[in-house]
Length: 339
Ligand code: ISE
Image (cartoon, rainbow, N blue to C red; front, side):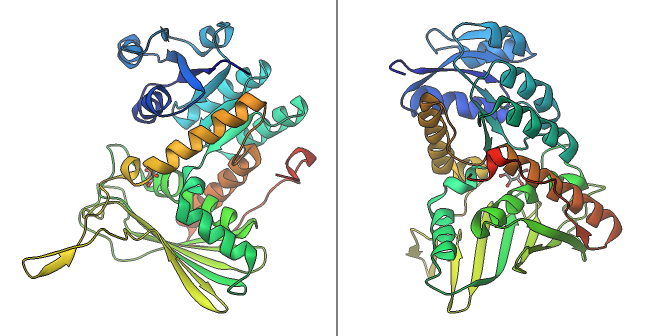
């Protein structure tokens, strides 16, 4: 493809706007051709200043537009399934913000539709895979220089939660990243999830038990524990400590620059995920654009979205029952076996 990839962005909320600015200002080989939002003012505001970009109010309108080469789907997850089937129906590449869909049954229907199409058109927005340190840890695990990885300790801390953030969303919206990270690091499926709750912060809104402790096990028996703490107040911190046979590897702790002054030393903590992962998001979207121009994907696909949805389902049941819950997956279709 010699011309730019013309991208219709669906959803002009927080992530949609972030991606629109990224596509417009930092990504090579792509341009925003349309923005869809049910709120016409939001769509109009999002295209203001982007030459040639049209504001639209429905997915169908964007898909019928001859100027749409690809779609970036950034609506809430419950709207993804219908949009993904329509996009696959047009055989267009799509970068779908996480989650693929909110539950494993609908995610599986999407996997089946893509399998029927016969090529991978869906890339899922698990941006942590594009973070340089995440990639280093994956390479270390796969390369075996420190022997086998035995355990993973994850900390996922957010300063606060937006209104309406339910107890289940600690799993579905936040720990979903750890499910994907553990699968990415180890190359294995997660076989069980357990959730424990203990002493809670007084800073959580009513109905939310925060923090929570999530324990996962992979196929080969790697144990991963996750501290999910979404009202931590001090800032945004996402880190992993990997325990190997011959060493420990730590990623994600803000590693400077450190300043020493007035008898103290230290440095800033990220305020939120947009800042913490801004480079990873840029790399993710650039990789998708480059791959879409060649007719493929370059990153997590529909199978990964489906597996994460199954883990979330097990996680929410584990949260509710206090039991260890098995993750059950359908057989992996051949389309995804090399991926
Ligand atoms: C949010 O939706 C994200 O995806 C962030 O990466 C995560 O840290 C946060 O907990 C979620 O609510």
